Image 1 (cartoon, helix red, strand yellow):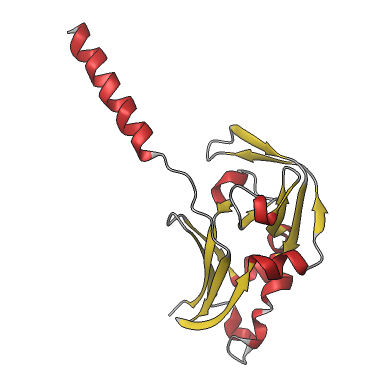
Image 2: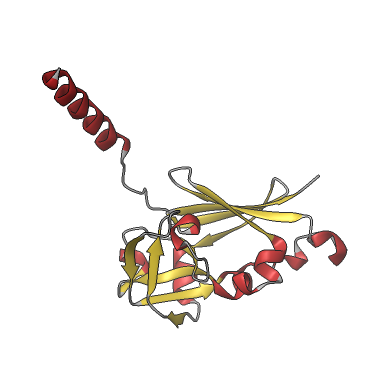
Length: 171
């Protein structure tokens, strides 16, 4: 019985290791609005923008357990970069029906509502990172990443390898 248990643990640990993978880097972010191509943001464009220095951020998992601490952060405020009002419907009343889906190269996806990003404190704390741990964007391991520094469990909306931002209206 003990041998069966050890064999089970060995197989389980091998499967867990096989399920882990590294983040594929992306040099561009494709932006779509209601399924239509609205533009591309490149890593080179991000590097040219004025980035703010950010305080250290503890990355916490869904249980609030610290997993990492990010130092030497710089970033561009997401809401300043997107300026979606010209891309959306002309009626500001309808902007509240939009949400933004952030998709990583590995398929990891997080969602923000329009009001969260453009009408709440979360929007003043959601950044596209241009430096992490003192390493600038071209050499960053995760490459293009988005992070909401005011989240209690910061790891839930820390998207590494960001490749797409989808702006979608709730119907």
